Image (cartoon, rainbow, N blue to C red; front, side, top):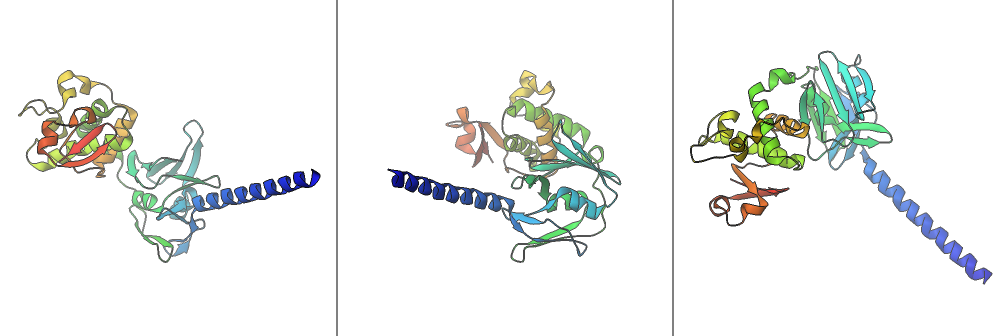
Length: 279
């Protein structure tokens, strides 16, 4: 009986050891593979590749670009802020964007990461907010950022105030509760109509267009006038930055999509959340 008990204990110990090793390996894989990271040919420690994206420690990369930048941590928002010459950059773990001078630099495939209690962000995001050239050679595991830093325009200069006002409101009214990608997609539809030539050429004009009947129900019901949600403003800014989730002219809910005029006459593009998009 004692021998059997010892055998069981040994087997359990081996199984636990193997399990712990697998957890360790999984954690290491999540950290990513070390890459060479350079700014104007000067090395920066900590560069890694995760999911084919070059990442850098947030503070290390910004400090290399702008040595005088000051950093603060906002525990209430779980976000860190860097203040430099003519620029304020905010980033949070888990978000797919960084905010710079009130603008949203979005990367759908690369969220900000916590690696060994250090905030990591895509190299491209920081390079873009400083108007710097950047590259990533995946075969050589080498990422380079180069140039003289020049902060991007602030939100008040870049976004047309009226476009942002109405785009955020129609996104909020049409897609409140939808995932961020779905909200961006609604914004994409409005902006695609502006470019199409068959619709008015302003955000306001597209929303309130009734040439062939009401185009957006919230414009008729009045819900478009409600204060937009924070995520809707975020989605509107991302769409105005030029990021496209879909290239579409129409959308409707999945509940009414089947057999609808849109489904019968327009080309299907994608389904995101509770909306179906068509061109």
